[in-house]
Every structure is written in structure tokens, then in C-alpha cells.
Image (cartoon, rainbow, N blue to C red; front, side):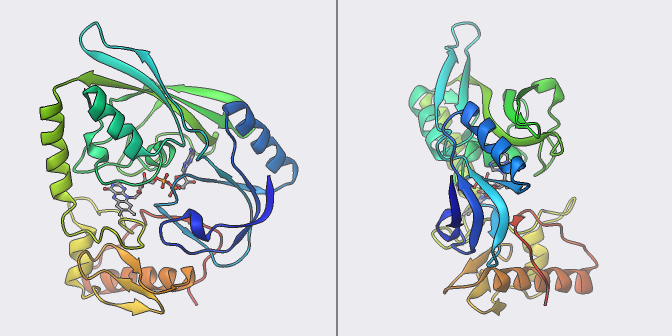
Length: 295
Ligand SMILES: Cc1cc2nc3c(=O)[nH]c(=O)nc-3n(C[C@H](O)[C@H](O)[C@H](O)COP(=O)(O)OP(=O)(O)OC[C@H]3O[C@@H](n4cnc5c(N)ncnc54)[C@H](O)[C@@H]3O)c2cc1C
């Protein structure tokens, strides 16, 4: 456990200040201890995975940040002799890229929708990450987590409600996800690559390789947030070192040493434009760590 820990290098926007306490548990038991210690100090708890969907405040963050990077294991539970189904258990800190690479290597299908998505399994579960309507729904058999009494708990698939970009767990009940059991199917590598190619094609036009946190806003029902932002002339708008991407209006780039307050103000400006010009209230897809003020 470390005090006054810098978070700037732990998120893909590359912004943010210091948190009161930082810890990186290696096991579920250690995660229970970390949660209990933070509660004892009367600190808020924030879970950080790959930091690819979160805006971290520049101001000191009075919170214990629990980083999941070391909850990184993958275990084969059943090898798919009957009906071609394979079950694996994976830690919340496993990078989804690693999980996808393993699935390709072993010829397991189901995770191709993770193509081009950065971050960890825990972050992906928490935000129900996905693409083109595909996601974890139907694949996840069980989630292991730590509750707010610092106890290990499990959620079976029947309790998980997979909605668009929403946490399938009751956030009030769960402090953090530690691992999950996923069911995949055997398939030929050729068909897996075909599916990956299709998902990769959908990523065309996204500013990959830039400092962003993916799509800032959720798509409103039946609409594309990127399209609305583009129509409202948001592309190229900038505040400080933050700029709305020229290639995809739902991405904000940290072009040159942006502060997170610049990024936040730019997000709010975009929202206001879309509300004023199209009457649509955009909801954030990104999460916030710390306090943010408009002015
Ligand atoms: C270039 C780029 C492309 C992207 N493309 C996509 C895309 O196609 N589809 C998509 O859905 N997203 C996309 N994203 C957004 C992001 O990568 C995903 O949302 C990703 O799943 C977040 O995972 P993370 O580990 O980085 O989470 P973080 O950013 O670390 O955290 C996100 C949220 O999850 C919570 N969290 C993280 N781990 C845990 C845990 N173990 N237990 C409880 N809560 C946890 C955090 O507290 C936070 O609220 C993209 C991002 C980038 C930068």
C-alpha cells in the first residue's frame, strides 16, 4: 500500500493527480484485506483496471485506488470434450488482449468482439464493453467479487443483467470484481480470424494510437453519438491540449499535455452543443475518478 500515488501513468489519457492510497492486490484474499483497510480509514474506494475508460481528476483524490493489474491469471476449468464447450476462469486484471490471443491460439470462439478494445477483463465486465451489439452476455457463467463488508461473494449468470454499457452487478453490493468464469466454444482458427477481421473493420476511423479513452458518450437509443457530435460541428473543437478527434467525433484526444479539467470542459461543451442543436441529452460512457467542476 502506498500513499500519495500518481495516477497519470495508469490511464490511457495520461492525465490526473495523486490518490491518497494505492494498492495492487495479487489475490482475492489480498483484495479483501485492501478493501477492509480502506474502509477502516474511511476512504472511498475506486477500482482501476487498464484506465482506458476513465477520466482521472488533476486534483488530489481522497480515495483508495485499488489497481487490479496483478489479479492476472487464466485457468482452464473444462476443456470442451462434450459439445465443444470450454470453460475458463480469468482474473479481473487479465488484459483482454491477452485473453483474446489465448482464445485464438487454442481455437476458442466467443471473444472476438474484444478486438481492438484495450484494458482489463474486470473493466470490460464492469462497463459491459463490446462492439456491434456483441458482448459478455451469454458467455459469463459466474463473477467473483468483494462486497462492501470486505467479503468474497459470487454472482451466478442468472443474477447478471447485461445491458448496453452498464455494469451487470449491483454496484451498491460490490466493491470490485476479482475474477469470472467464461464459457467458450471450439471453432476453427480460420472462422475466428474471419470474425476478428469483421470487428477490426468496424474500428476503422477511430484514432488508434492516440491518447484517448475510447468513446466518451454512449450511443442514444437508435442513434450514433459520434454522428450527432459530427453533425453539430464538434470535430476539431479544443480546450487547452484536448481536442475532439478529426477522425471520430466521439473520441477526445490528449494532443499535448492536456489537463483532465480541459478534457472535462470539452466533453461538457460537446454535450451542450448536441443538446442545443439536436435536443439530445448525451450520457457519458467514460467513468470519472475524483471531482470535476464545469468552471
Ligand atoms: C482506443 C480505444 C478503443 C476502445 N474501444 C472500445 C470498444 O470498442 N468498446 C467498448 O466497450 N469500449 C471501448 N473502449 C473503452 C475501454 O477500453 C473499455 O471500456 C474497457 O473495457 C475498460 O477496461 P479498463 O480495464 O481499462 O477499465 P478502467 O478504465 O480501468 O475502468 C473503467 C470502469 O470499470 C471499473 N472497474 C475496472 N476494473 C474493475 C474491477 N475489477 N471491478 C470493479 N470495477 C472495475 C472502474 O472503477 C471504472 O468505473 C476503448 C478505449 C480505447 C482507448
